[in-house]
Every structure is written in C-alpha cells, then in structure tokens.
Image 1: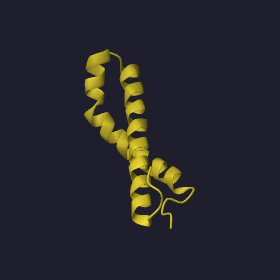
Image 2: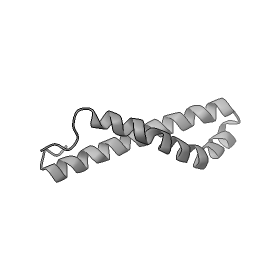
Image 3: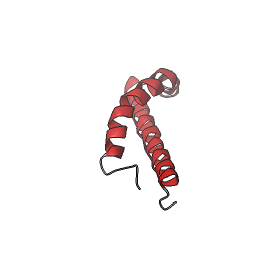
Image 4: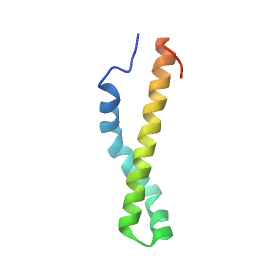
Length: 74
C-alpha cells in the first residue's frame, strides 16, 4: 500500500510552497539582504531556500509513507 500516490507529491509541493515561502521570507530574507545588500539577490536566495525546504519535506513525507505503508526503504 503506497500512501504517496502519483499526483500527491505535486499537490503537497503546490500547497506547502507558499506557506514555506512566507516563513523563509520573514525569517531568512532580512539576513540574506544584510549579506548581499540587494533585494533581488535576497529574493532569489529566498526562492531557492523555499525550493530546498519543500524538496526536503517531500522526501520526508515519501520516506514516512513507505515506512507506514510497508514499502521499500531508500
């Protein structure tokens, strides 16, 4: 039994990306701006950080679904 069906990771990424983006933006963007002194660079780093966090969440959810569902472990 696989809880992570074909479209579920895409749906999770679409739903969680704005939430993660707002969190990363409020917590890390001021530090990114101090480091780069550029709003564009801080925004780009915020977007890259958001993509990395969402990717890690999807990996975690996939691993948990395989563990709960009894599937193959990485």
